[in-house]
Length: 171
Image (tube, rainbow, N blue to C red; front, side, top):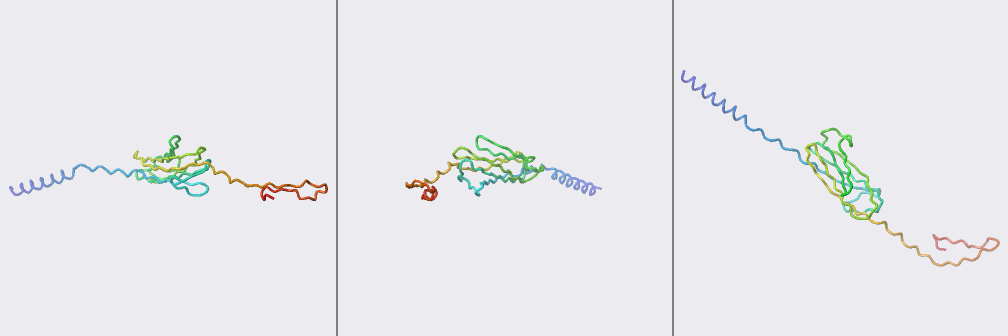
């Protein structure tokens, strides 16, 4: 009887230890990485590099590509004075989408350096951002056209004289 009691006690202790060990604290889930943003820009003439020049009035297409493990929520473009936000509904995306592409068409009517900041927010309220700068310049002056003086004869009564002057050909 004593041996049965000892085996039962030993089995109870081992079972209790196993139960208590398995009830340890749960590990906190690792949050997903913050969104990553990549930016590109182009004009009708082709791709534009970061810090590239455009002429006043040129339409610039800025495209932001966002990758977000935590689910894409919204992306905002800002130039320090103006801003625009596109959320997943504007882009036609479902909740939980992990990537998105947003585009804006912008133009500037004054020369200067424009610093664009693009910030993305995921469903976990984490942010990621990227920047892109554009130098807006005055249009180049047209080249000067050199003309020489040409003495034209007076037209004759029979209209047979050559008194036509071509500005393009300078003769």
